[in-house]
Image 1 (cartoon, helix red, strand yellow):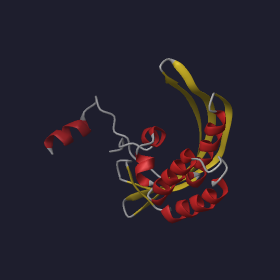
Image 2: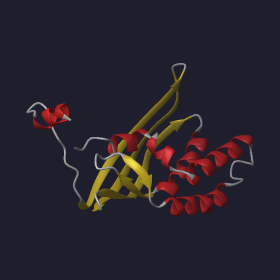
Image 3: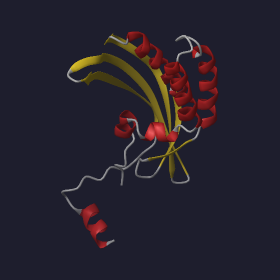
Image 4: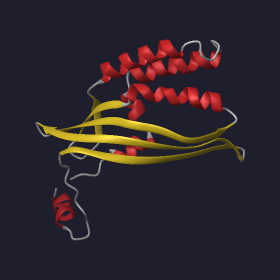
Length: 169
Protein backbone atom coordinates (compact mmCIF):
# COMPACT_ATOMS: atom_id res chain seq x y z
CA UNK A 1 0.00 0.00 0.00
CA UNK A 2 2.86 2.35 0.84
CA UNK A 3 4.54 1.56 -2.49
CA UNK A 4 1.27 2.28 -4.34
CA UNK A 5 0.98 5.66 -2.55
CA UNK A 6 4.59 6.50 -3.50
CA UNK A 7 3.88 5.62 -7.14
CA UNK A 8 0.77 7.82 -7.19
CA UNK A 9 2.64 10.77 -5.68
CA UNK A 10 5.79 10.30 -7.78
CA UNK A 11 6.55 12.99 -10.39
CA UNK A 12 7.97 10.21 -12.60
CA UNK A 13 4.66 8.39 -12.96
CA UNK A 14 1.70 9.52 -15.05
CA UNK A 15 -1.69 8.64 -13.61
CA UNK A 16 -4.55 8.55 -16.12
CA UNK A 17 -8.04 9.08 -14.79
CA UNK A 18 -10.86 7.35 -16.64
CA UNK A 19 -13.73 9.68 -17.50
CA UNK A 20 -17.06 9.54 -19.28
CA UNK A 21 -17.56 11.04 -22.73
CA UNK A 22 -20.57 11.80 -24.89
CA UNK A 23 -19.38 10.56 -28.26
CA UNK A 24 -15.95 10.49 -29.90
CA UNK A 25 -15.12 9.16 -33.36
CA UNK A 26 -11.84 7.30 -33.85
CA UNK A 27 -10.34 6.44 -37.21
CA UNK A 28 -8.34 3.22 -37.12
CA UNK A 29 -6.10 2.33 -40.03
CA UNK A 30 -5.37 -1.38 -40.02
CA UNK A 31 -2.58 -2.71 -42.25
CA UNK A 32 -2.02 -6.45 -42.48
CA UNK A 33 0.74 -8.28 -44.29
CA UNK A 34 0.51 -11.96 -43.43
CA UNK A 35 3.49 -13.90 -44.71
CA UNK A 36 4.26 -17.59 -44.80
CA UNK A 37 7.81 -18.67 -45.58
CA UNK A 38 8.62 -15.19 -46.87
CA UNK A 39 5.69 -15.08 -49.31
CA UNK A 40 2.88 -12.59 -48.79
CA UNK A 41 -0.38 -14.50 -48.40
CA UNK A 42 -2.61 -11.56 -47.53
CA UNK A 43 -1.77 -7.87 -47.81
CA UNK A 44 -4.56 -5.46 -46.94
CA UNK A 45 -5.40 -2.04 -45.61
CA UNK A 46 -8.67 -1.15 -43.93
CA UNK A 47 -10.05 2.11 -42.54
CA UNK A 48 -12.41 1.65 -39.60
CA UNK A 49 -14.32 4.41 -37.85
CA UNK A 50 -15.54 3.73 -34.33
CA UNK A 51 -17.96 5.98 -32.45
CA UNK A 52 -17.24 5.52 -28.75
CA UNK A 53 -19.42 6.69 -25.90
CA UNK A 54 -18.45 6.03 -22.28
CA UNK A 55 -20.76 6.21 -19.25
CA UNK A 56 -20.24 5.51 -15.57
CA UNK A 57 -22.69 3.75 -13.29
CA UNK A 58 -21.98 2.61 -9.72
CA UNK A 59 -18.20 2.97 -10.14
CA UNK A 60 -18.27 0.86 -13.32
CA UNK A 61 -17.64 2.18 -16.80
CA UNK A 62 -19.67 1.10 -19.83
CA UNK A 63 -18.44 1.78 -23.34
CA UNK A 64 -20.73 1.73 -26.35
CA UNK A 65 -18.62 1.06 -29.45
CA UNK A 66 -20.45 1.48 -32.73
CA UNK A 67 -18.66 0.84 -35.99
CA UNK A 68 -19.60 3.69 -38.31
CA UNK A 69 -17.69 2.39 -41.31
CA UNK A 70 -15.37 -0.41 -42.34
CA UNK A 71 -13.79 0.37 -45.68
CA UNK A 72 -11.37 -2.10 -47.20
CA UNK A 73 -8.95 0.04 -49.21
CA UNK A 74 -7.29 -2.95 -50.82
CA UNK A 75 -6.78 -6.69 -50.49
CA UNK A 76 -3.94 -8.32 -52.34
CA UNK A 77 -4.22 -11.99 -51.77
CA UNK A 78 -4.05 -15.28 -53.53
CA UNK A 79 -6.97 -16.10 -51.23
CA UNK A 80 -9.00 -12.97 -52.03
CA UNK A 81 -12.35 -14.80 -52.05
CA UNK A 82 -11.63 -16.32 -48.64
CA UNK A 83 -10.43 -12.96 -47.24
CA UNK A 84 -13.60 -11.22 -48.43
CA UNK A 85 -15.74 -14.04 -46.98
CA UNK A 86 -13.94 -13.77 -43.62
CA UNK A 87 -14.33 -9.98 -43.65
CA UNK A 88 -18.07 -10.47 -43.24
CA UNK A 89 -17.48 -12.13 -39.86
CA UNK A 90 -17.01 -8.60 -38.44
CA UNK A 91 -20.73 -7.86 -38.79
CA UNK A 92 -21.92 -9.32 -35.43
CA UNK A 93 -19.47 -7.16 -33.47
CA UNK A 94 -20.17 -3.86 -35.24
CA UNK A 95 -21.92 -2.79 -32.05
CA UNK A 96 -20.46 -3.63 -28.66
CA UNK A 97 -21.37 -2.55 -25.17
CA UNK A 98 -18.42 -3.33 -22.91
CA UNK A 99 -18.16 -3.16 -19.16
CA UNK A 100 -14.75 -1.83 -18.11
CA UNK A 101 -13.04 -2.01 -14.76
CA UNK A 102 -12.10 1.29 -13.12
CA UNK A 103 -8.63 0.78 -14.62
CA UNK A 104 -10.01 0.35 -18.17
CA UNK A 105 -9.80 -3.42 -18.60
CA UNK A 106 -12.63 -5.18 -20.46
CA UNK A 107 -14.67 -7.15 -17.92
CA UNK A 108 -17.75 -8.26 -19.83
CA UNK A 109 -19.89 -7.74 -22.92
CA UNK A 110 -23.29 -6.36 -22.03
CA UNK A 111 -24.97 -6.99 -25.41
CA UNK A 112 -23.94 -10.63 -25.92
CA UNK A 113 -27.50 -11.64 -26.89
CA UNK A 114 -27.55 -9.00 -29.66
CA UNK A 115 -24.19 -10.28 -31.00
CA UNK A 116 -25.34 -13.89 -31.02
CA UNK A 117 -28.61 -12.98 -32.75
CA UNK A 118 -26.75 -10.99 -35.41
CA UNK A 119 -24.43 -13.95 -35.96
CA UNK A 120 -27.30 -16.38 -36.44
CA UNK A 121 -28.78 -14.16 -39.16
CA UNK A 122 -25.41 -13.75 -40.87
CA UNK A 123 -24.69 -17.47 -40.60
CA UNK A 124 -27.80 -18.27 -42.64
CA UNK A 125 -26.66 -15.88 -45.35
CA UNK A 126 -23.08 -17.23 -45.40
CA UNK A 127 -24.01 -20.93 -45.31
CA UNK A 128 -23.26 -22.57 -48.64
CA UNK A 129 -21.54 -19.56 -50.23
CA UNK A 130 -18.28 -21.48 -50.40
CA UNK A 131 -19.84 -24.68 -51.69
CA UNK A 132 -20.50 -26.33 -48.33
CA UNK A 133 -16.78 -27.12 -48.08
CA UNK A 134 -15.08 -28.49 -44.98
CA UNK A 135 -13.30 -25.12 -44.59
CA UNK A 136 -16.63 -23.30 -44.64
CA UNK A 137 -18.09 -25.72 -42.10
CA UNK A 138 -15.11 -25.16 -39.79
CA UNK A 139 -15.32 -21.36 -40.13
CA UNK A 140 -19.06 -21.35 -39.38
CA UNK A 141 -18.56 -23.61 -36.36
CA UNK A 142 -15.80 -21.24 -35.19
CA UNK A 143 -18.26 -18.36 -35.58
CA UNK A 144 -20.83 -20.28 -33.53
CA UNK A 145 -18.32 -20.59 -30.70
CA UNK A 146 -16.96 -17.03 -30.95
CA UNK A 147 -20.33 -15.30 -31.12
CA UNK A 148 -21.98 -17.44 -28.41
CA UNK A 149 -19.32 -16.19 -25.95
CA UNK A 150 -17.59 -13.20 -27.53
CA UNK A 151 -15.55 -12.04 -24.52
CA UNK A 152 -12.49 -14.27 -25.25
CA UNK A 153 -12.55 -13.17 -28.92
CA UNK A 154 -12.51 -9.49 -27.92
CA UNK A 155 -9.94 -9.92 -25.15
CA UNK A 156 -7.56 -11.74 -27.52
CA UNK A 157 -7.96 -9.21 -30.34
CA UNK A 158 -4.96 -6.89 -30.50
CA UNK A 159 -7.07 -3.91 -31.59
CA UNK A 160 -9.38 -4.12 -28.57
CA UNK A 161 -6.47 -4.96 -26.29
CA UNK A 162 -4.65 -1.79 -27.34
CA UNK A 163 -7.76 0.38 -27.24
CA UNK A 164 -9.19 -0.85 -23.93
CA UNK A 165 -6.25 -1.62 -21.72
CA UNK A 166 -5.58 -1.59 -18.01
CA UNK A 167 -4.11 1.97 -18.00
CA UNK A 168 -6.23 4.09 -15.68
CA UNK A 169 -5.61 4.77 -12.00
